[in-house]
Length: 112
Length: 112
Image 1 (tube, rainbow over the protein chains, first blue to last red):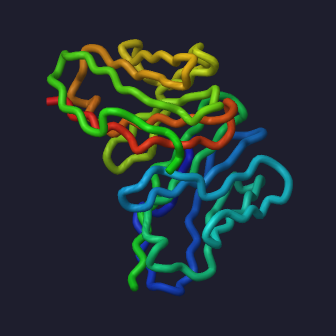
Image 2: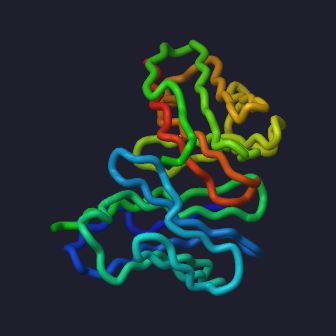
């Protein structure tokens, strides 16, 4: 079955620590890749996206993600997290059609 | 703010009843998708409408149906409600079929 896997359901970090959230998907071929974030009490919003080109994409608030086609991965990174990064993060994959598949999400808690 | 609004924000229904959830998309967005998000899970794709026609469907039974109107509003209808239908229902509009989605705040449906 087609799936998107996020390796960690809960992550706790101290401020200034580095962050890497894993995302793997199970499709071959061309994909559009997304990371969405949901801050407490807010809508889901786009953090960054990859459609084509440079596999290292930069998003808002200092986040970046790297698409590694051979590993079917699209991991999210940030060199130094802040308390305000506390949120739930969702990886999502679209194969160019109507259906976007979301991972189960990773809850990040950053200790001040 | 994403420009996507949903109503109502919360709803309680009895098993067997019918419910209609509403969404107002961003102006100019021809595509609207609906998702079901159960507690602790990522959004699950229900279906997508493009220019008022159903464009694709996920693994949901026919008692989940929808409509999209020319004024960028849309509806999700669920008949014969079951307890397992209790979830957060998200509406997301997009400029095109497979691009990033702009989410509403969701409708929390509880079936008792």
